[in-house]
Image (cartoon, rainbow, N blue to C red):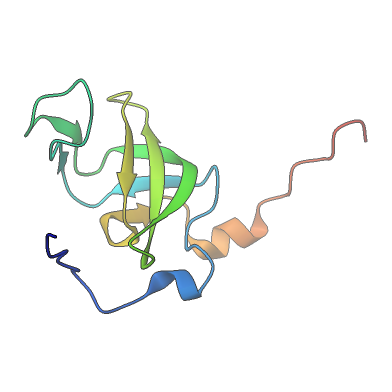
Length: 106
């Protein structure tokens, strides 16, 4: 059995996810294929530092981290990323002021 190296002792999943579905986010660093992205060569750039995208899914990894599936507009790639790899494009204060979508049929 292989040893899994955890990069942090923090367990994020004891709290709600930091980012929400549909939230606009920005990559903090360039993300390259580590071999887990099908159809791309190992080392190929999946998202450039500063590239913006939207959270389209939220999952977990190792019962420790949230993994945010981010659809990047420029590259067209959907990449799984940790919170520490992302920044919100819209500040939390501005998000509180955004109106909620209206209910269908209202």
